[in-house]
Length: 511
Image 1 (cartoon, rainbow, N blue to C red):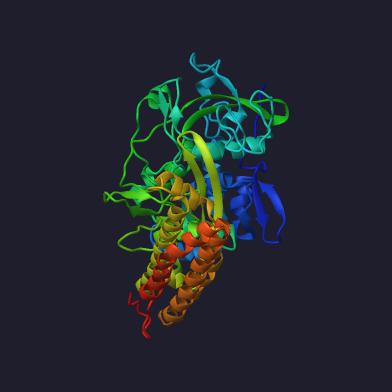
Image 2: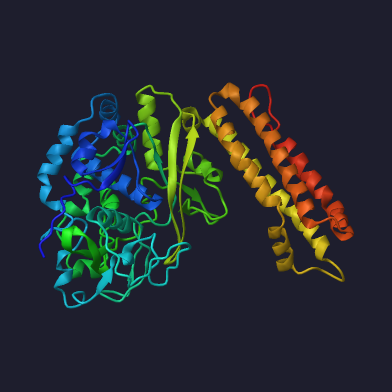
């Protein structure tokens, strides 16, 4: 059956227009009217981030930003839709989802190769939101083998997301294992904006001519043969090569009306690991051994607790997207608050744990001023220290609760601490308060009142956590006695907040 689905013209990208209407559009419309589109509106964080990265790959290839002046011009002048039209005209044959010779982000020879011709699997194999294989997802009632078909637009979104976010793991087609997608293993950070045009400009990195020539997405490269899949290839050459990469060899099998329920699958191109080469959306911080590691999503930690990774300090390396946006907004003399998008997929090997998509609103001054960054560093450091001190007080209380004849088992003590309300109440209260604190750091003269307010917030959160734990421990004689004996540890935690966040009238932290 001969099918076609032109991703340039046919609607498949979910967007929200400035008038709030949500619609599917093709790539040509997305770029010709990017200044009229308010945001991407994909159905989950993985698709949202992958789609943004795909559009940024097009931006990097269609119009190189050579320096900050070129970026300012793009930001302030009319959106150059003619540039993107010319780029799509040049590569028009590479954007057909079901093309015979060059299907988009796919490998056409899989249907004929002896190792893959009979390896037909369902589209559920490449989704992160459906249960497939050993992956069991809560509240998902689809089953592999159910024969579910997808529209071509849905299949295209799934394909784009999977090439960025597929987990690594064992494999037995051309080689024994397959690497994870370039979007795996870290929390993605980018700068949002009121229009898609502005957001793409803020997150497109500057490139020299040599960097531009080397940085080619999958659709500009030759179709990789089995030998390229077997051998490890050179490292990514830039943003476009990362954002549009054949992490897996896939070939969709279209059916009537362009719908799709199955595909051919094999390992894709594995790139050499380079620990010094960070993804443009990746923040890094040093490990105990001195290595710089990506900031990851966490089941226990809210994203705001890693805000320090978004500013430049001796203990953090912010994403290149954030550094570029700060430089660009300063050059354009736009000192407005910045909204950062943060999200991604957390996996444990091949097991998908969670996905997340959040926003952090911050004054531009916080991201650019060393003095304000120092205040933010202190505030977050003391919050973490107070959380540890609260844990210590709860541990002391739990130990007293369990102690009868001799020492209580440490594992049992930890389980009791986890069952108390204290840690959750402490961090939940800070979750609500931190956005206001961050928004108050607008200038050096705001440091003093902001830190004083944060000190009161920490004391209130600590008190709520301690009192909530006493209540959840019960009102028995043993529980009250344990709380009384652990009370000095709680009092020391309160005192340390005062000592650590003492400020002078110049706004300098004394602690």
